[in-house]
Length: 240
Length: 99
Image (cartoon, rainbow over all chains, first blue to last red; front, side, top):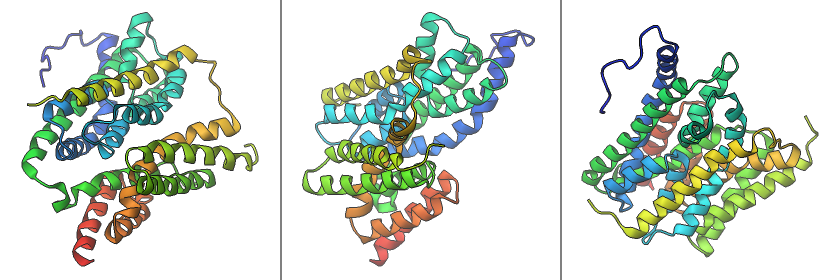
């Protein structure tokens, strides 16, 4: 990684302290993301994407969930409208995250629009936690953003390069790694009644649509069915 | 290293959509307060999408994948993400050899 070895800030400067705090907070997240990035690259390569295409997707989309979903539903030629719609559904949560974090960040004008390119679940969660105690500075955000973005782009590209030498991912069960990863992520949303209704409805509708209509429409139809189910299921619950 | 034009367009479309969602919150800050059923529907979006993506693989590919998915779901509530993935992958390899 082309990192400048000289410290751009005097050690006493608050920028340096904020930057180091960002590095410290994001380090474990970045380490955990490496094998997932390698895996993404390898499976994307098996779906026919070149290492360059993987690098561009990671650098510009920079969203694990959307990229995983896109690769799982990938076809040749790429179904652009369906992929864009699935991406919108997966990333719609960013709007709520940005609305919450935006006012807590010490950034002005164009800086905010540059900084929020790097909005991720992880950077958001760490910043919200930090915002409970102190303002979130540009230096803190920049440290997290650059490390996580560089880490993701490099690890996925490396995965694509290595994956093209690996051959058929089904041979070692790597094709199932996404399914397992997604199940793990879904479990993170808990086991509340509304969540279980959502998951059950989406799974059934997506499987049926995939069987009778085909990819990639199972993603949008299953998602919309689950969202509708959550809306209806929640109405029966007392307000908390 | 190849760069397919349709693939490039798909990546650009995904990138533009994603960036709009990232900065969208800056325009609606303090005005977007969801409650009740609307909040439940919004909160349901990520799990609904994730399940929809994997449902065909998990449910309709074969018994090995379906059973491995069930095993993975059970451990997912107890173990960290990487351990969950490892157990899922090992399960499907073992089951494909048994079934």
